[in-house]
Image 1 (cartoon, one colour):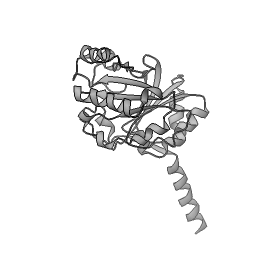
Image 2: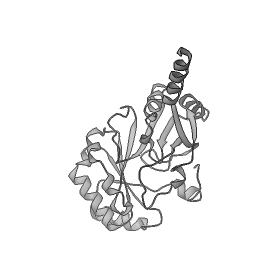
Image 3: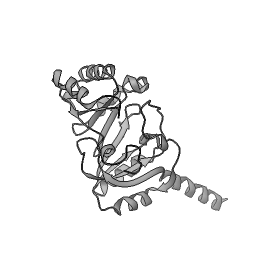
Image 4: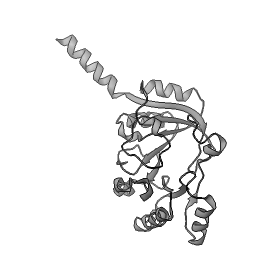
Length: 229
């Protein structure tokens, strides 16, 4: 009986330190204020949203169960200090929290890209959060949890992906309502191929809006549909 309990407990502990990983790859950061820097990406499997413009649907289900130590060993093999935890939606897997903490303990600069639908309250404060509030054209805007604004730090970033003028005006309203300019860096980008860059940039200039416009740089370097970059 004792042996059975010991094996049961061991299996539980092993599961506590396992994550379902879609891919781990080394590339350059294509977005955020870290754009252009070398970065190791850890893409977790699974997402609770189904955005109309999603470009990572392949991460919804496919993945491999890996222990945290194996994940970190893979990250270390690239000899790069910047790591982004992304998805899918990485916060769906509870074991992502000890992974991020261990990476911070080991001296990595850790970025977390997450939607605004799940709480960021318990994310290690050393992690730089890139919070992607979903706009109306995503059809997921009702899932945004704006209580997350209270947990943002000055080094964090809020991203809006815009697919229409309605999205742009909505984002402006959110910025004002939650005083985001006083809290974080704000990133604007367009749904790839949906809005002309010059059009969105002109809107920003006309409104003298205090945001940072960004391109998905990796989609211009490689084929826009290529994974692992």
